[in-house]
Image (cartoon, rainbow, N blue to C red; front, side):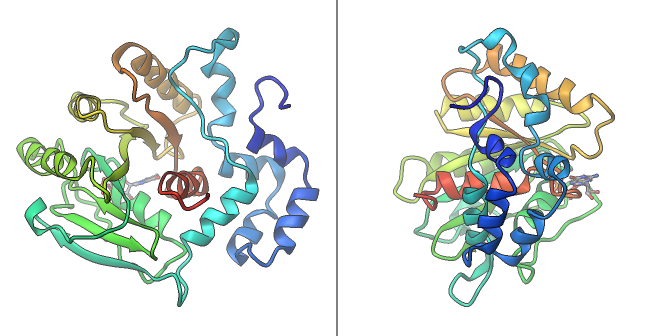
Length: 288
Ligand code: GDP
């Protein structure tokens, strides 16, 4: 049994060095992840379980009815998920194509995960970070907002497809409705349907009006979605907590059954990236 307030996956970090040693000795742990496991414990926890730092504020007085939940895989599962995201001869990870509209989208049979967010929310940077174990995959990151004009498709071995949607809210609300809404309507409920929609929110600016439209859309279509809080390295001291609490309030008052799991991430420090990879591998059925 986990101690109150401690999650099981994070708790296992306390069992180290036993876990560390077993994992780093295992042939199935990638070299990159074995190196991660050698980080000092505090740093490791921040990198692998970033929500843990603020978690005690999320469920005051042990309330069980909070919509916001935390995903809590073991370090072993994090290592397995990293393998899914590692490009090898047998696990090819490639950019497939781009499409300006859904009619031009490739007909891919695998489960999909899709990333949406306002322009400049950090979508390209996040996808690039997720694919850092496949350095040949080209993800274009721009300093100019509104750069992502098309939806981009990436395939991750035989496992799943990652869809990078055009950013919304910057000179393009109508494009957002045209493209994202059509895509979500089109792909839901099929064998190749979207397993999760990842809605990116910039932690420096928080949830904006345009994000509400996207959230309402996910709720209306009953799409499972989660919120990814980006750029947490840029938030000033205490700020990620403030955003997390605001999002928790938002979830509790504005959302229905499809509660948005929250993932704080940084594409710069890589905090939360392993956890997000693990969540994607899990929801696409690759950790069973
Ligand atoms: P997109 O328009 O949503 O694809 O956003 P980008 O990935 O192009 O990022 C927009 C800007 O935010 C760029 O200048 C990035 O360098 C910066 N950025 C993105 N992610 C992070 C992050 O995690 N930390 C920091 N400090 N900057 C980031």
